[in-house]
Image (cartoon, rainbow, N blue to C red; front, side):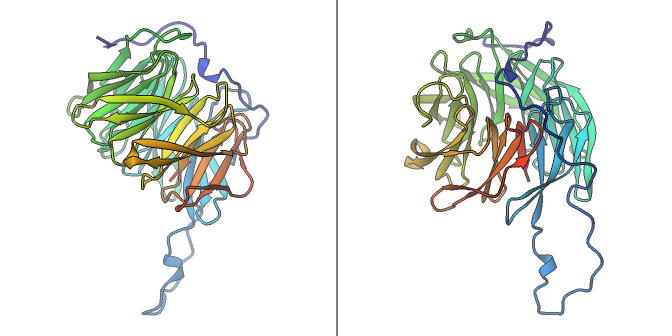
Amino acid sequence: MSAARTGPPTGPWIGRRRFLGVAAGLAAAGGAGQLTGDPAPARRPAPAGRPDPEHRPPRDRPLFLGTYTSAPGGGTGVGFGTYDTTTGRITATGTVTGVADPSYLAVAPSGRTLYAVDEQQQGGVTAMALSPDGPPRPLGTRSTGGAGPCHLSVHPRGRWLLSANYLSGSVAVHPVDRATGALGERTDLVTHSHPPPGPGQDGPHAHQILTAPDGRHVLAVDLGNDTVYTYRLDESAGTLTEVSYAALRPGAGPRHLTFHPSGAFAYLANEVDNTVVVCRYDRHSGRLTPGAPQSTGTGPGTSYPAQFLVTRDGRFAYLANRGHNSLTRYAVEASGARLRLLDTVPVGGDFPRHIAFSPDQRRLFAANQKSGSVTVFTVDARTGALRRTGEPFAAPVPVCVLPL
């Protein structure tokens, strides 16, 4: 078997995931405040037959930032604020304290609950209730049963939270209360036990877990084992059963996987060997078949590619390159089967750890860990070209940005 259910790990936490350093001396963004500002004053309705300008969609949308609270210059919890949908300008309004090392964030399909990993030796996942007229409200933390959880995602039907423990090489499942969004006790914990670790690795290192577009399969990307595992999630019991695994070439170091909208292909960023791979995906079996490695457009050496994004129309893909401080733009061709490298764009910061689209995909946000900044780009829907918008927003060791 390539997976085994285990108890929590023991031993010192080496903290390998922070090996490239963090910015120091940065001030935490914002103070106390509301998520979307004070309520508007009472007003008279517009005359009949006339458009009411105050009924337009709000320009300010919520935005959340993850950080390392235990790092020099790090934040004090989950930062929250807004971004202007017209200009992209970010405004900080506060911080949810008491969440340790919230390095990755995800929102429930309902939009009512925010989840964060607690990337510590005794790993945890924290739920926070969202409100349009107040700051996020913590709902409690549950143990992941592993060390250094670095990624989480919510199953599309909102019933289960999935998390990946990097340091212990395991993945966990927690139930979600439908009424409140709070988390229950863990229902499963699976540790990757084979294939053996890749060159230079000391063991498995689960880096991502997500649900495939078919909704029936869950994929876990393991950097240490150079493997992507496919599981079937029992939606009644909250347990994972392995159905297949895809082995990458030794030393690839797969980090982050993103699906094409068709669901027939996925794009994989390999952190260690500085490549990307187009993978075929069979929605019936859950089997992933990796293709040949391709260039990140960053030249020789390792640039620690971090994350892929694909546009909703499936025409363009973007890759964050931490060492090169750039974003690679690809044209997606042959209905998703091929990536054609177009260019690399300077990110305007140092070490872009995480990138995210706004919901309308008119903006792309990049969290630059070392420079303590978030860069905002305008996305050209026709060409996929990126254009920086304004000055980067200062934030303490931002490692995840989540615009809603």
